[in-house]
Image (cartoon, rainbow, N blue to C red; front, side):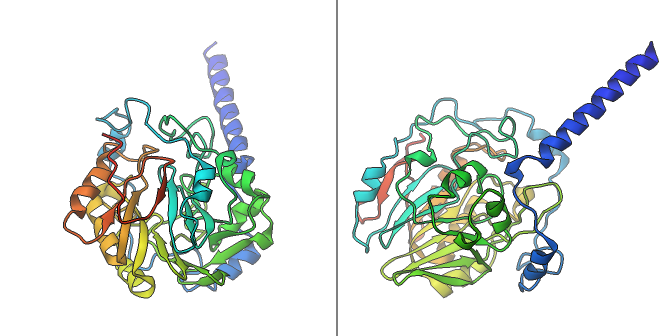
Length: 370
């Protein structure tokens, strides 16, 4: 009898393992795989060491301390909102009409790092993540906070281009890309990330690969440059740092915008400011940090310093307000950023999710989370 029970348990374990492997292997959200031929192309990048991409400065990638890992299983204090988050219902017609002059910048922040930006009359969608979970699986993993109004692809106005900073699940959403693949003509990605988009049906000719400091023209009014950041990549169990990561300098004839992507603090921000600044508007990562992974996600005072370094007039702290990916209180990033920015020259914007914002001197602070 005992032998039979053990056999049943063993068979169940093996069955679960096989099922898990199948779910992992054939899950389209995992994305594509870099072929040997493409790997040879990637090796030509000065930011590739022959095996993987590397950061420009030494970056500790060690696992978090055991005490930190244990803390993830505790409820903690105020790590998630205790009520539905007040959010605007995104108005695509308003976004299209407001401040339509090319010399003006408008944007909407959809929570975390997802942004729709209007610059030089063009609509650029950056790191759009609208799915219920930022995860390989739709039924487990970090779940988005409960908003009054959640965004979806069908709510968007026409999009001229999509910009992806890196391939982590909270920045590259399979379902969103799949729904946009026949609606958008250009997808800008760091080196290697194209394999995911091609896997999901985006035409190869519509994907523009960029290495750090590469600049490409969108048209006569706008250039897009991939800027360095201090981070890492990988959507699977075995492909860490197989694709590049970064931020974007979006350089118009009349306006300039910076999007940091995910990053630990490093001297690259100063170089970005010197090369491409000053900026009219910057979206700076501020959230999901911890001292255990400070090398790849800035602490709030470092986010403030990054904003100073890149030299932007207006700054929006992002990478907070939608997912719980760390242990801090969910409102801590924005509150600490505001506190730290008081003595600096730039002006901070804290938009309500989905709100249409037009940059102007009479913008007022909005403490919607309080």
